Length: 307
Image 1 (cartoon, one colour):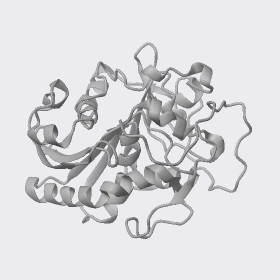
Image 2 (spheres, rainbow, N blue to C red):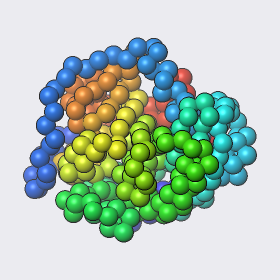
Image 3 (cartoon, rainbow, N blue to C red):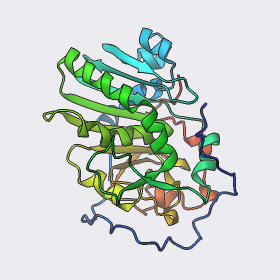
Image 4 (cartoon, rainbow, N blue to C red):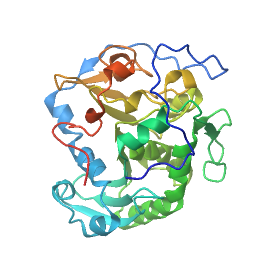
C-alpha cells in the first residue's frame, strides 16, 4: 500500500499523558451535549452499501471499471463506473460512478496499510497547512489541515471533479455520497469541502467514512460541522488507533458525526467533537496501551476493508 511521502521519522507512539497543546486555535463549536444513542439493526444496515463502496476503493482502476474485482465490488448491484484512476502508490486509487439502486453518485478513495499510516500520524513534526487557494477559494486562512492529506487530495482533485460533473450529467442524479477508509477517508473528507465549491447549487451531499484520522485543526472541524453542504458520519471500530491520531495536543480536532463500534458490536452515535466518553473513540482509546491495530480494517457490520 502507498505510504505518504512526508519525509517523516518514526518515533515511539505518543501517549495521552503529554500536556495539551496551548497554541492559539479557534474556539470549539459549542453544541448542546446530547446523549449517546445506540443504533438499531435497521439503522446499521443502511450503512452497508457505503461500507462495500469504501472497501471497493482498494481495487485498481482496471478492475473497478470492469466492476469485476470480487465479492466486495459485486455486493452493490446497479452501479455504473464513470471514471477511476490512481496507481495505488503516488496517487491513491479512486473511482466515481452512480448507483441506480441508491439514486446517488458515489466518490471513493483508497485507504492504506495502518502500519504505514500510524508512524506518520504519531510524528511530532506533523505540519498543518492552509488549503490550496486555487482549489478551495474563499476558505479562511484560519483553517489548517494535515499537510500529507492535503497533498494526497490535490493529486486527484481535478480528475475527480471532472468525473463527478460527468456523473451528474449522465445520471441526472443530484445526490453525491463520498466514502473511504483510513487515508481514503481523510481524502474524501477534504473532497467534501472541495466539491461544493465548484459544483452548481441544488446538489445534496453526505460523507460516510471509516477509520478516519484527525484531518485538521479546530477551525477545520468547526467549518465541517457548520457547513450545510457537508453531512459527515465517521465510523470507528473498537480500539482502532487511527481515529485518535494525530493526537489532540498537536491541535488536531475531529468534527462531529462519530459512530463508534463497541466490543459488543453495538454501534453508538457519539455527539459532538472528540467525545471523551469511553463509549466513543477518544475516550475508549486514550493511550497506546488500548490500541489494537487489527481493528482498523474492521469488520464493520461483518465487512472487512480490502479489495
